[in-house]
Image (cartoon, rainbow, N blue to C red; front, side, top):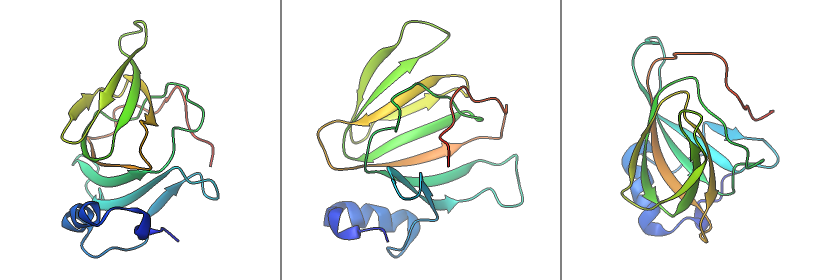
Length: 143
């Protein structure tokens, strides 16, 4: 069960804008040791070329801290909380950046990164992905 009581009322209101009433997540990363939850805002049901949009609430750091990439180009909008993102683009040396409320970022599928919370109990993002462009992530969470 997702504990909405640990999410500030003002942030619950933001979540409601995207998912309607507060409900259980559609997906949990690493069941039994959850660190991130996903709600479908605009799932890619029968149109794989269209974008998909998710609400994510992160309650812990990426489990290994290793950099990973995705199968699609993506955009994140930080709705609440603070995170530190470690990134490495074009095989360059990794760097860190702070992601705070209102921050918008675009990543290519090949951009490697990892996320960790920055002194707050959770962070909430709107995460949009484009069509699948590859199927060879450098890191994948084992479920």
